Amino acid sequence: MALTMTSALDLLGRHHLLREVIQGGDWSLDAPNQDGEPAEFKTLTYDTRQVEQGSLLFCKGNFKPEYLDGCDRAGMAAYVAETDLSERCQAPGIIVSDVRKAMSLLAAAHYGYPQDDLTLVGITGTKGKTTTAYFLQSMLNQLSDGRAALLSSVDNCLDGQHFRESELTTPESLDLFRMMRQAVDAGMRYMVMEVSSQAYKVDRVYGLTFDLGAFLNVSPDHISPIEHPTFEDYLFCKRQLTYNSRKLVLGADCAHADLIRQDAAAAGTPLTTFGMDRTEAGSRPRQDADFLVRLGERHEDGPADSYLIGPASAPMTAINPSMDGDFNALNACAALAMVQALGLEPDQEALKAMEEVRIAGRMEHFASGNRVAYVDYAHNQASVKALLDFVDEQFGNRNPAVTLVSGSAGDKAIDRRQGIVQAAQNRVDRLIITGDDEGTEGADRICRQMLGYVTNPDLDVSIILDRTQAITTAIQEGAGDGTGLQVILVIGKGEERWIKVGHQQVPYEGDDRIVARLLGTRSHDLGATGTPRG
Image (tube, rainbow, N blue to C red):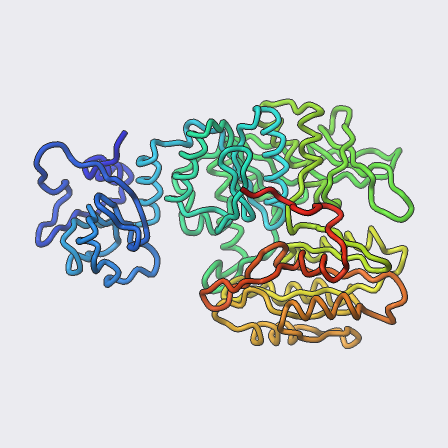
C-alpha cells in the first residue's frame, strides 16, 4: 500500500508519536488540504542532498535547520522532525515525539512490510556476531536453494550470492527496510542480520519482531560519550532483542545469563542454549546446555583437527571449520542451534557449507619460515583475550615470541584502548601501538593514551604511528632474539582498504595485503580472494 500523508499520519497517530502537522501558520492533526486523492510519497530519505520531487525527509540526529534550504525547490513533499522548521521551508512538517521511531514505522510501511515475507533472524553479542551470521547464512542457503540474505558488519548479501561491503553493523531503519524489500524481490526467504546495541539505542530496529534472536555473549564494549555511558546501558540495549524475538538462542556461559533467562521468561520467549563442553573423554558431559561443541582429535603441535557438535542429548557430528579457534567452533554451535530452533534439520551438505565459510580479515593465517602471522578484526578486550588463548593452545608448547600490532578507533568505544592493553600486556613479548581509524581525535593522542595503560615494566612496547611501518617492523624484527618461532598478530583493520582520518576515508593497503607482501605468501585460509564481493 502506498504511503501518503493521510496514511502516514494515521500510522503515527496509532503509535502515539504524532504531535501535529505544521504548514505556515496552520497547525492541525489532519493532512493539509489537497485537491483529489492524497499524493503518494515517491521517496523517503534522511539526507537533504537526496531530496527530489515527492520526497519525505526525516530530520534526525544533529540536523541543522539550514539544511532545508533548497529542499522546496527540489520538490520535497513534507518533512518529519521533532521541532517546527517552517521558517526554513514551505512544505508541511510532520512533528513527532521521536523522529527515529517514526522513520522506522514509516519506512516499513513505504516498503510494504517486507519483514512479513522473510524469516528474520537477529544476532547480538559482544563478539562472534559476524562469524555466527555467516555460518548460519551458509547453512540456510544450502537448505533453501540459495534464498538466505545477510546483513553484517563486514558485508551485506541481498540475493544469497553477491557480497558488498557494509557501512554499519545494523543499517539505519530506512536503509534496513529498503534492503529487506530488495531481498524479498530477489526471492529471499530468510534474512540473517547482526543486531548491535546501537540498533536498539537509536531505534534502527524499532517495531521489528525477529522470528529468532540469538544472544551469544556480552562483555564491556562501546562505552563512550557518543555510544553507551555505562556497561549497564550497553547490556540493557542488547537485552531488548529478547523482548523482540519469538524464540531465543542463548550462550550458556554468557555473562549475566541468569538475567537474560529472566528476560525470556518475562517475555514468554522460548529459550535454547548452547555451550562449549571441555570435559575430558570418559567424564560426565556437560548437562546445562541444549547444544554442545566438544573438542575432537588433536595433534601434538596443533589445535583440534575437528570438533563434535550437536544436541547434548543426541549423537554428535564431526565438523572442521576453515576458520581457526575454539571460539569459532562455538560460533558454529550457535549457528547449528539456531537452524534447529527454526525447525530445520541440517544435512551433511549444510554442515559442509558452514565448514567452508571464510571471512576476509578474520583469522587469516600466513606463514613463512619461522614466522607465523594472523590478521584479525579483534578490537576489544574480550576478542584479544580469545585470540591469545588460541595462540597459547596452538603454539604454546613451542614457546613462541609473540608480537601484537594494534591501535584503537577514535571518537568511540574509548574503553577498548585500556581493554586491549590489559588483555595483551602480560601475554605478549612485544606490543607495537599504531594508528587505526583515528577520526577527529588524532592517532598520536590515541596511541599515547594506550601507552599510558601499560603497567608491565618488562613489556617491549613502542608507538609507530604509521600502520604500514608498524606491521613491517613487527614482521622484520619480531620479538625476543628472533631465533625461535615468531607469532605476529595484526589486529583491528583486517582487510579494510581505508583508514578514517577526520571524516574522510584515506586509502590504505590493508593489513592482510601488507602481511602477505612482506612474507611473500598469501593467506592459508582465504587464498587470493576471501569473502566474495561483486
